[in-house]
Image 1: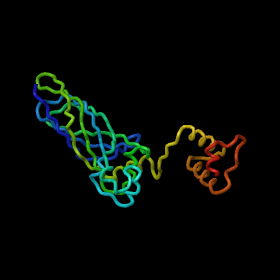
Image 2: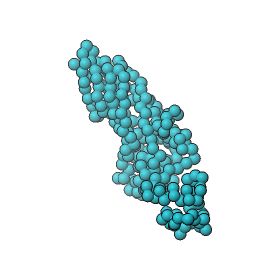
Image 3: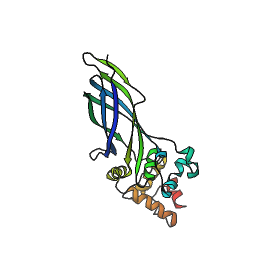
Image 4: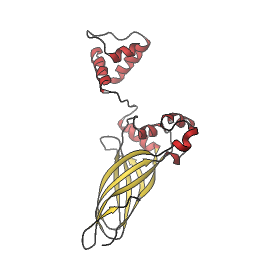
Length: 229
């Protein structure tokens, strides 16, 4: 059986304008030197390599909670896991071009998102590592693993990530709260008839500096009491 030697190259990346949530599309060119590929069950791991770019003072300050002070970056600027996604590639001979969809989150508790949100411009250096199974053969049918050493580097423009997030969360940030705090916040919003979460948070912020909104018949929950201190 002829060994199938695969090559991988990323030729570009853009946001998916038609996805239900934030999604990046990485354009991959896959080559096969050897037997015809009947199908390719691919797994791709994406890592951010922060040591491969420079940072302004503002960026360094925002990245302090991830990597510490700039003086420590010689040892603390370690790779950050970005995503791990599967892709089923149809059969091809020679080479093929496919798109790899990578869903993204705006959860700032996720290290990769916090890193991306801290950057002002330039590119994000990514390493794409491939594994999986290739189904191949000219006259018959064979199964081979995709070698673990298969990889390629790509630069993700910060502008592309920001435009994608702005499409789905225009002018917004994201905050994750424990369920009990969220239940108290919802109760506070309902009791005071506040029309939106923005109005709810602004009411709590105003209460911290002045009189709180009128209380309902039930006792105000702990979150609201905390905001009024």
